[in-house]
Image (cartoon, rainbow, N blue to C red):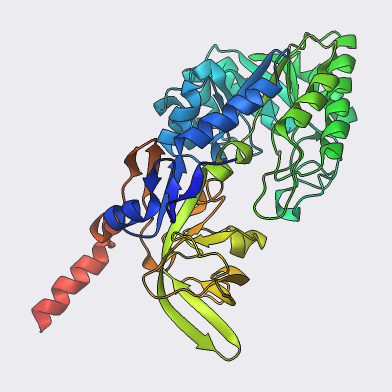
Length: 430
């Protein structure tokens, strides 16, 4: 469920017509619903009742400070994959001990900063990373609490580019080898082995892969304890899917039930790292029709939102529901259109062959389920400005990231000294 509903013929974000925000802010823009963020968090937390469970929001899904802050106020920690995300989590008010540092490519500088910040856990993905972390921690007189991320060789049956738990994926350590790595880790200075971690992918619709991966992870906890390690945490990652259209993902309640079954008797703190399921349906991308164009048998709506604003359709062949901000009349005639952006790429199509009521130039559309992997993956490709982000709370809204000016976009770059000198010399010669 989300809080983007038609009222009196207009699509609202909670109590505000989206068209009113569009007129004030300009398009395209992202809009997030506080009520949806809070509801999704609470539904998942309730599904985990009876478990010593800690929800660490996966910041990579949407790194806006206001989004992180909204979830932190509900009690969420953060799952991060870079120093930049650590800074975001801390700036949004997440307690350092509630931060888990994941990712296969942590640098020495990131490790040092994370240790200085006092984060709660490093998820280790290779022997080489473990050795570097030991070196960095020992040099600082610090102790890094680590979980070994296992690779369970479980196919999550999701898109190939977001599957992370198969043997050939770059993530984690094969289970038998992970046990040996833990034996070595226990002897290293600056390292305290406290947990096991697993994550098999994103937009997982079937609970079967979760069940298999969680059982393997629980088995690793038992094996490590038999080996003499004090294992206190089990990080089960995230990945629960959301409905973009006709998908029917498992409910949080059903997901909570398999978590409860997997950890029964382990006496572990359980970490969950949801991202998409918390924020995807809490956001929309609002865009405006620029032109209606007929090209042979294909009718295009050329809109001002583009692949640089929402990359998922081009990168993952994702299919987002797109609806007009003005509610169609009952029985309105439909036409099949391709909705395309202005970027100079044939792949800049937000949705192909979608049936919708006839649209005109200056009509507003909303790309639904755009709160995850939308703004956070945006770029300035084609010299386009990053779009603003708006957070709605009841009848209030705030622009939580402004649309930059072209001057601000260019200010991050400079000419080389010889360009400036050459220009001066050229002017003098003229």
